[in-house]
Length: 384
Image (cartoon, rainbow, N blue to C red; front, side, top):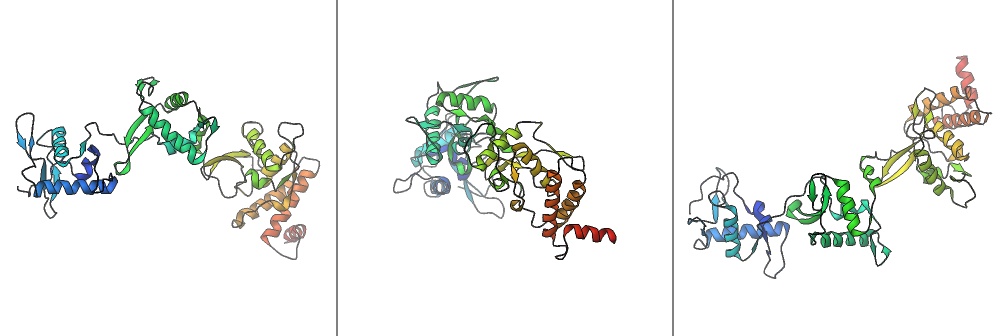
């Protein structure tokens, strides 16, 4: 057969047609997937075209007899085998090929995975109370159970239904991902919440809808302080909900950060330049959401720390406050801001003393002159 004709638009090769076939096995009977499956299919197409031309025929329903596989060659390129699906119906050509080679033709092929659809691994973080024999699962056990639930619901068509404003949609769908890998997904490309809630109702688990915002959280910045870091800074922290509870400082601060973040009048601090910034910010750290003190700005940091101490009735351990290691310019500006603020503080003196001590700490970090104190340096500077 001549094979010097150019490729025609729409003709399928082994890579594009592989999704239509199943039960492709090697000599040992092992089912092939991905690249091995494509390579096997490519080889079988070449064998049929070159070695068995007598079998490379398809008797169409309209009475025509056409080749199943054709060979194409663009100028300057090598010759490759393609299915003859332009001159004949695709279903008849592929079914004929499957019959000759002894593999399975899947007429209803799996659609590609759509944006927003979630495999079990991606859906795991939004699902809670996944249990087995009354025991709540976590980690690998939880993921394995979700896989089983997806598979169970997919094979129950009468249960695999969700009512949406646009009609009934399946909750779990079969999709084809990268390298034509088959997977079951939550049908969350649209009506995400409805699909999640329908699945959870069927599976008797919980939908962590609050975690939906985790995808838009900013990553934690280097100098923002978590509750664990703050436990070294704030001592004798009061219990967030009153009363006496023997509890380490870190868990108390986790609760305090949540209380502050959910209270608009608490979650703000006024800076000397007139700006108002949030005291606590929501961040994403190592794929987990958390609250942090808004201390990425070295100038704002002392005012944030002071406000938190007032809210939590804590004592501040100045020496444990981490300072920026690189931004000397910002550290100098922070020191100057604190010096000015010392004369403006309206408290009974403790606030002024904190600003002064913080400015002293910044002065020592800057190492402007090892022989001078901050007061002496300021006096010397005024004289100049």
